[in-house]
Image 1 (cartoon, rainbow, N blue to C red):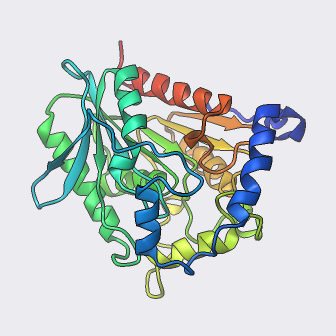
Image 2 (cartoon, one colour):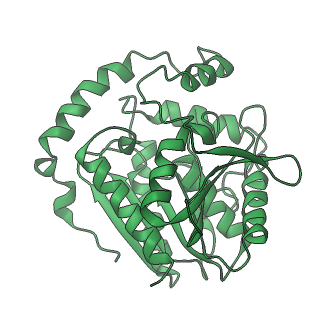
Image 3 (cartoon, one colour):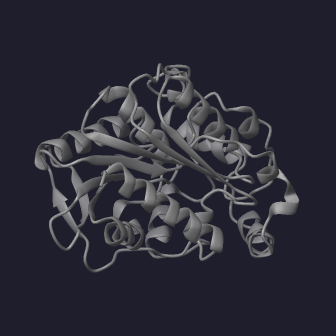
Length: 309
């Protein structure tokens, strides 16, 4: 259900564990080089080795690569038996970083909890490939899933840039009866920047205003219209969308993106759930925290409910 509780935004509601984590991680993030100082290719390699502030969640045994028509790859984390449905995962990383196999542990956990096979789409990254290359790859992955598993219900979702791509794919694909749900975790939905993002400043809690501006310039450089609803789905007509789960922390610069997109989702006549986590920073779910476990459980419950009884 879509509700907003003002007390969620009261700093007094932040759990001591969350507050302590934020105090530890902020100086680590602040000490990192500014975007663009280290070549993108080197940062990608470092992340793949598990270097940096984020725990390494893959590759893991039990997930495998598969090539789909057109030469694109997807990462399959299968359910052990006959799957109840398919979850198409679109990864985050500012359209610039990360890869599907770096989410194996998370996607295997989702498969185990829901009885769904998880398909994580590989898509072309910026700045080598600008918009709409990533959209085309994610749409191709969705089309393949729908053709490869006829009759099975599909849920699509992601986090951060992956949530943006999820919304963009749904806008591009239009109403699809087999798409039963969308997971839109702390996404960016307006490339012009919502107020919380534009006004955040330089404080580095994974994201800040200059970092996000750098990401946006990578994928949507000069010549790409940022008010195009295909790129900024907050501006799109959202009628006929599937039920959606929105999750975000109150200390995420993209807070307004989630709150505004959830409101627009419901305003267009679609069902939506909203979960707000006091003190949660951007990508807090990647760490071993109580709010991260609640976040994962909420997502898995939503995914399971999308499949029906």
